[in-house]
Image 1 (cartoon, rainbow, N blue to C red):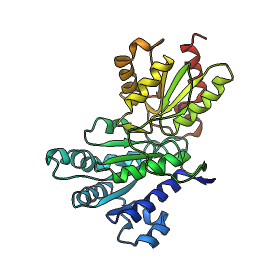
Image 2: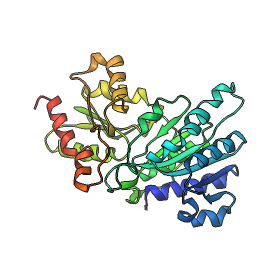
Image 3: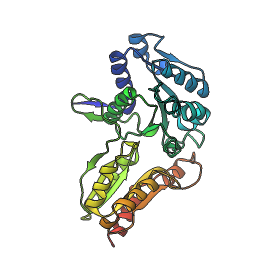
Image 4: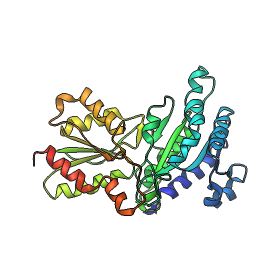
Length: 319
């Protein structure tokens, strides 16, 4: 038994994939400084720092992917992706389709999201729903270190561009790891806790909040199932529908805003394809439609809390 953090999971996946495939390169804002062991092992030509120029970093990565390399780029914080949208959305996301499959774009974009570290609105915002609307892109948001390593290995091997978001607040929290971690296929959700009365569907840091809520609900005689989506594009529709049909009550929880978010898509899917199994309407818990605050206390009010999930679950059960 050993321990691993999300940040260590990223570094471990990079080392293993760079060793396995000589076309994998890693560059971005501070990557060489934060990963000196990778520089020593693979050289400055494959692991390098860049200027703080997100549009140039992403544009270079698209060109590298089209030329036969497998670039992994780090743009630090999710809001910084606004500078790189043209390269990611209009080029990486569309050119494989526009070329009739003549080009592939095996590109991974790393960024950090999630409130709780008092970084302020310009460094903290969950923008994953933007990329769900962009054809050709995949979006991964792991909740724990083991999934981070396994999913990143698959993301690097994928021939399509993948947005890979980790939560900065929990990136250095260690978790116990048992055995080797292989590649985890994209698009496969994971039942983090089995239950029969209500399903809590989530991803990223909010999965831990759902697990906390499920533990407290169990003390009140409520059996809550927790489904970790892991990949939000593509969604594991089969797992979502199976859990919804099993419990008949669903709450979707995420830190991003409710309006036009993942929760709305999941709720629509369930209502369209599993309506007959529902005992109550699907509920959504997300952030309010405001910029993320920098005050720690306001951040706690901004983020989904276990108490809110518990209250929602009890209402669904008529308690």
